Image (cartoon, rainbow, N blue to C red; front, side, top):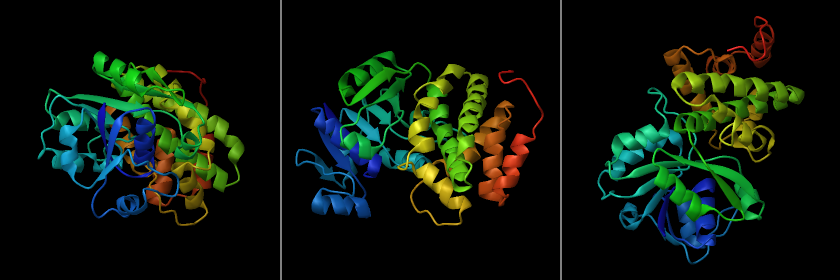
Length: 320
């Protein structure tokens, strides 16, 4: 299968390596001005992996026209701009796979909605979500992930073509729940990092439990299946996000409360704004997201926000 991967960051490059590893014909696209792409062109390496000679490298976006499958792995807030660029190319009868986690700020659109809003109806859109880190996959440590799509044949084809003994894929059955759950787990990851930074790591258990319940309520109200919050897209990704030293979101949260700069992308920083928009739109209370927003954007004191969460009105654990 001919595949183009758009995005040469750590996840895009791992996907490229993985799909070549299992026998697909893969091209990796990166912008001409990208420092990461220039490094790949010069050495075929980044600080985590080496891309074999069988992978084509290009800075020409025309590469999408020859691909059967186009995989997109960029910062979620840049997806609309990329879709605008892609309108200049012949994108018909293709499968577009979004390997990203986020919700658009300002509109609350899920990433599949952005793609579908901008693509010809002959194309099919899917999402590839779930736990895993580049460092571990590259060392051969397996994990489980999920692929979902509104089109059943697309979902089945991708799971069949992409599965291996390194990644076991499950069939997703809830685009709303999987996309919202995947985006929201990055917010929980930042909160977990803040608890680490405050030396309150034992509270990460309650954070995971209540965070999942909060997201499940939102998913249900949006029309999705609340059980998706307990699947691979959200709860199943917590170990990789809430505890792992490789998690950008967790590291960002820890650095934030300790007053240290952190320069890598932490999607949860943007997602929390979109989550509050969705909460307001659907009338769902999101106390953890609200507290995180106040800390990140309104300079609220983290311990005060934690105290506020602990002092909320008492209630049944699983009340609806």
